[in-house]
Every structure is written in C-alpha cells, then in structure tokens.
Length: 234
Image (cartoon, rainbow, N blue to C red; front, side):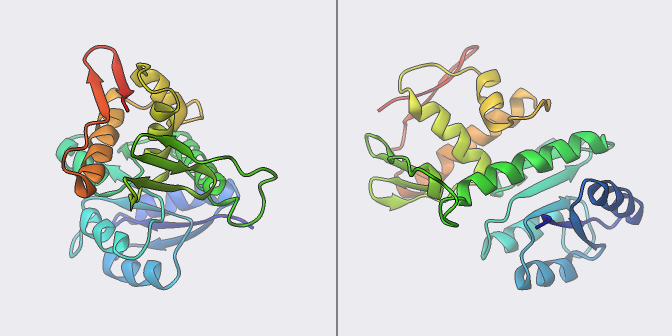
C-alpha cells in the first residue's frame, strides 16, 4: 500500500509542486493550506509522515507539531527558511525527525521522506509479524533497547524516541566507549545519499539527552568529544 503523506503549508504553490513530486514517486498526498484543519484531519486519520511548514498563520508548524505529538508519534519533516535556525533547533527538540531549508530540491526532500519511512517501517515490522528473527534486547547499564519494537527504557522507565533518535542512540550504544564521529552517525541515521549538516546531528543528541533527563536528571551516558564526535558510556 502506498504511503500517505500529509503536506501542510500556506503557500499553495509549494503544496502543488511537492504533491506532484510525491505522487510521481507513488505516494498518496493530502494537502492542507490551513494548519488548524490539518491538525484535526491528522489526529482523526494519521498519515504515515507529515511535512509541515514552520511559518504559517493562525497556528505555526511548531504548535501543530506540539499538538500532534500529544497523541501521535508520526514522523514529521519541517520546511524552514534560511533565517529560521532557532526554529529548526526548537522543532527538533519538540520531536520533528528532520528539516529541510527552502528553497529545496524535490529530489532531496523525496530522499529524506523515503529514508524516514523505511526506518519507521523497519521499527514496526516485528509488530506486524514480518520479521523472521526477533533480536535480543540491547542492554547497556540502565539502558534497554528493543530495536524490532522500537522500545526504549532507562532504569525501567519508558523513553519515547523518534526513528532518527533511536537509530543514533542504537549506533552509540552498540559499542560503549567507542567514539562515533558525526559522519558515522549521519550514515546510521540517514541511510540514503543525503547531505545532513553537523548541526542536525548535534540537535538530535541534545534532544536525546533532554528526553533521558526527563526520567533521570542525572543522565550522563552520552559524552561529547569536541572535534571527534560522541560516545556512549555505561
């Protein structure tokens, strides 16, 4: 079945061009120029992925994401302008999976959509009975990860991660003490030939730390090695 993509942007030209490009790749698109109408439709019938503009009247993309996240963990990509660096970081902190700057290449956006959908499907495959083997949970100190089911616990408490966050954490935790460069983490989280700048990985790491510190204020298992990358310590 074709993946269902919700496009939310007050610029109808962007809605039209992105929708045409997505449909050419076999996706089903639902387009909304009004974010309030989009919110109700997304909550009533969640898509497989959402693409939200940040700057919109009435309800901006950040507020739309916040309200969607109250009930759904659907992957979301933000569309941002060049001068919206603060909004990009805030969007990632709130649970967006990625962002792409305007003006953007349709090819780049499609590649990121496919990458996120593929990883999301892998995470759900065991629950749908599609995996031939069920891997053992990954346990590192207080951390427990169940990759097939996309479940994470810290000291027995659930931690909700997006697909991108999960992939980055799994890459770090698989080999504790080993420094992973930003490039290596990019390769793990973005498995297509898609450019992602260093600041995107840094934002994901900050968001991971914040989520774990919500359940354990003393969480310090992810170290930063300036100029080298990150490592997981037990």
